[in-house]
Structure formats: C-alpha cells, structure tokens
Length: 359
Image (cartoon, rainbow, N blue to C red; front, side):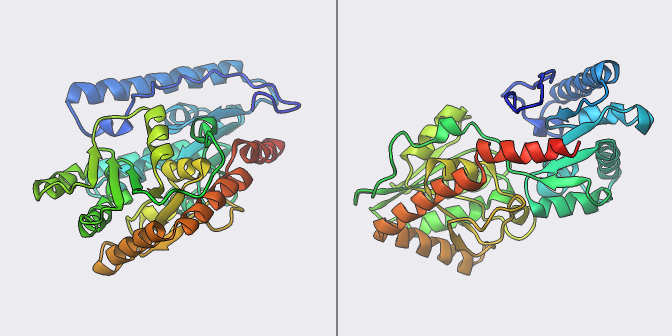
C-alpha cells in the first residue's frame, strides 16, 4: 500500500513481536498475563493519543489487529473529534475466547465484560474489516454494528515466502506426504485428522506430518501412546514462518480445517492461504466461507463433523489423491491460479483502493 497512487502511507503502528500469543491473556502465570494486558492497553493508549493529536483532515488510520486496544481509548472522544479509523477485526477477541476456546461461560460476567468492551470499541471505528462474509455477518450480529460498517477482504500473507520455487509439475509416484499445520484447537478438527491417520497407519505410500501445539495437544499425545505409526510425525515445537513454508513446500497434500459448522465454517485460515499460494492440493471440510467476491475453492471437500462418515470421507480423499497423481497435480495448479486471481497482494491492493476511495 505504500505505492498506491494519490496516497501517502506512514507506518506509526506499535507492532507486537512475532512471538506474542494473545491467548496468554487467559492462560499461563498471572504475572505473564498482567504484563501482556498492560502492554496491549498501554500500546493502544499511546497510538490513540498519537492519532488524536496528529490526525489531519482527510487522514484515514488503519488499525491492525487487535484494533480494540486502540479503539477503546478513541471511543471516549465524541464522534466528531475522532480520527477516521479502519479497524482490522480479523477474528473477534470475545468469539475466540468464549466460543472457540471455551475459556468460560458465554453468559458469565467476564464474557459479558469482554463482549461489551469489544462492541464499544468496534463501534468507534469508521469501518471494520474481517476476512470472510460469514464472519462479517457474525460480527455484525454479535456486536450490533450498523449495516455497512463491516466489509470482508482477503488476509495478507508474505506470498513470496510460499510461492513455488519452480513450476508445478506432475508428482512422482513416490510416498505422498500429507501435512496438517495449525494450533490444536477445536476449530481445526485434529481429532478427525488423527482418526484418519490411524486408519491409514499401514499405508506404506502415505506419510502424515502434524505441525502444531495447543489446547487439544492431549489428543495427539493419546494417539501416540497407543503406538506411534511408522508413517506419522508430530512436530510440537514452535516453527517460524520460513519453517512452515518449507514444510508446505515438501508436502504433497495440505489439510485444512475439520471443526464442524461453528467457527470452522466461518473462516479461511492462514494455512489455506499458504497452501494455495504454494500450489498444493488441499483437502478440507465443505462448510467454509470466503472474502466477498471470491469463487469456491479448488479443493477436495469432506464432511464437517467428527463422525465415522466424516473420517471415512477424509480417508477416501487422501487415498484417491495418492492413487491418482494427475488429480493432485491439477488441484495444485488450480490452487496456485486461484490464489493469484482472488487472494494475492495485487488483488488486495485493488480492494484497498476501493475502500480508501470511500473514505
């Protein structure tokens, strides 16, 4: 965006370090949690103060995630004195804490306080950005935002890191690597992946790699206690973006999410952006959402629940891709073209030009 004609872009954001994990606000030692909370609120206050003092007529401020930490301070100002802000909501803090991770009762005092805080903050923005149309509908309803206040545009990734280093070609008839990357939370459906891996444990032509840790790590631990399949590897340690890019580059098939019809059906996670950019065959649940204007994904779809039927569909999809290399090649080629046409930085730049043209 620094090179958009007629716009001057200045970066004044108080960026968090790449190692920051927002879920540490509700888990871990109390001292760590308080330190992170103070860091977020103080950083938000400083950014709000800068905006209030330095914003000029015609300026538009983009607030990166988590935008509510800055907007909460701006909401104190009368609306006519607030700078125009476009807030990146990405995923709702309240939704992630109380719907996704089940940190407490959705009707409890803490839940109500976080929901009120986030709703008040988002209403102080001129525009709220989310990643999919389903999330747009959900966040509008959850926080009673006015019609037209929320738009969905694709997420931004460093596509150069994931771009194939050579042209996509027909894979050799060697062992096929199936990769699952993600935080082990219910959204991702690691239970479905493990069940499928268990049923394919004797498949000499298929290799599973799971990269990630999190809330449901005990499911992987239990799976491995029953006897580690020779074709299964779990990488639990934190991986850099470059490490993840290398894992995806070495994979033949990338798995998406299998968490069912709740939050999993409202997102297009980063890992699928990565797999699409890398030109990989994708298997994911059929219930999903996309940014406005994007056509259906070029992927192989399975059921959205952890039943025997859902697991069998995943097993059948993996077996089919393993036995038909041409289909794997075509899925990968379609994925790379899809990313270039609908999710790439060039596409996002044009969408931002439309957004800024309205503000």
